[in-house]
Image 1 (cartoon, rainbow, N blue to C red):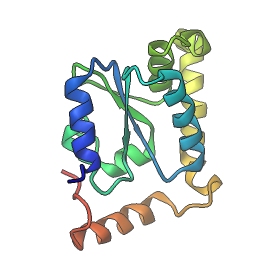
Image 2: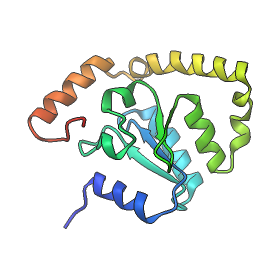
Image 3: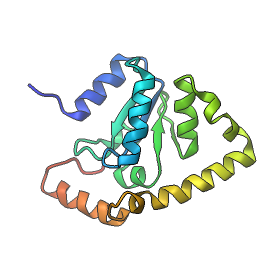
Length: 156
């Protein structure tokens, strides 16, 4: 018997003492490079739960209610208390959990944090184009078409 991605996510979030759940685009080559680095840094400790929003089994309600379109627009993470964070705060929190908090520490300063979020927003808007993928609206339409054929979960 095989487990679906959502079963594995549910199991890992209930049996381990995770500190942050990262929602990432598993079809983005640049995102995957960062996720691979973070997974190596986590070293199997389970501090970070990695949730691929591109997986057809992705369940928004199990992930802070963040639907596919929202998750594709900006990086999001869910904290153990159920709160959702986004943008540079996600990187700051993950790096802190993994012992690299100094990398993003300067973004805690209000002006620097605002600038970092602004720059990240520009990057997030260009990410799909830079990686040679369709725009967000096209990806959402494609996902809805795939979901209507019952191959994946509709955004809850």
